[in-house]
Length: 285
Image (cartoon, rainbow, N blue to C red; front, side):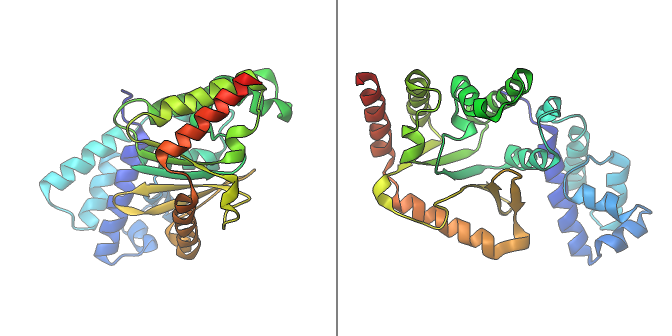
């Protein structure tokens, strides 16, 4: 089992401090002025992009009139655990700031729901499949290896062990039939889907060709769930983009889309049966 990432504690502090400030009736500018910070520093603390020292935390808690000893101690421990680099920091050469922010949210999520129309998502890829998928991009071998290493470690942290989120992957039938890397690579990838789909807490469903069109037919998306906040929507494209509470209409649209996709998709057993048949047919050719 992997140790908790500092981003989890930063997120805990982010939510607690924002809620405490709002209860106190202070704006971000007013709170920053009271503790003689720049407003940008307070914003970074409230978005979880930086850690907060124990002394700075205590100053904010006094300002927000948070005095319950057990609550204060819990947040102090979170502040102590928020320091240090996140697990993906060593991949800084291949992780953009936007994607690093997403990984922080993903590490803190208790559920992940995602749809992929074209290829098997990175969470589920074998190393050979990931290599083959990146090959047309013309990356230098060292950069390709770094990107694939990042995917493999992310996969291990999310899917190995009992501390990971509940995950639901809906793959279009095209994604499980497309021969990325050739027959041998796809065969290994399909076997991995079968193995992962048999684990507790991991659901893999297939959206069959006959399901027709839906709102996100042409693009993939991820919905991250949290017990103490709204879902976060991540739209996967070249630059990537995230939205949460600031665009509730778009978030609701994709939540509804995912429910529709789940209704259209094959059931759990039927999906794994289809993957098994595709694998069998692949070997017979």
